[in-house]
Length: 155
Image (cartoon, rainbow, N blue to C red; front, side, top):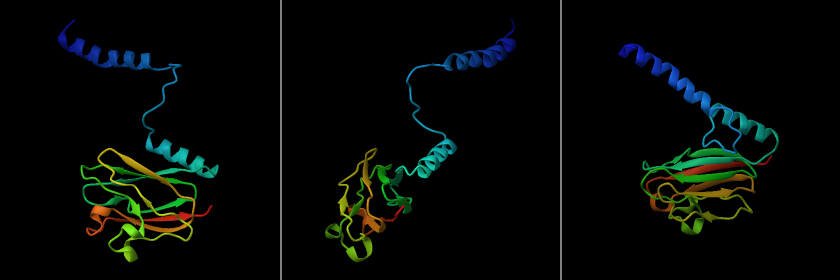
């Protein structure tokens, strides 16, 4: 067999054999990621069934919450995740703000929160049980304008 034919055969047959050996496994393995279209479909089903959802807000080295505006439902949870090297906080506590009039908004009956420092690769979560408008900030980067907004809708 010449080299060219060998490369063609090993490049087409072997990957197929490897893939075939991966299918139909009855183990209890769970996927580590869900394709985005499938994830959207699962979230729509959860929403239609009235189930709480989880939303992710990234805190990055550009001193931003991404997304900086988010609309969720009562009962949903937000996870703030530091994706850069700089640590951040997700804080909605007027007692901890330099400018509480602009950087903190809590609906009546809602409890203030402070994540504490969230370092690279760490996360903080908070479930929302009071509908209304929230404005929160990052303590070390408040002066730089690291402010986020949440709208929590009653179902």
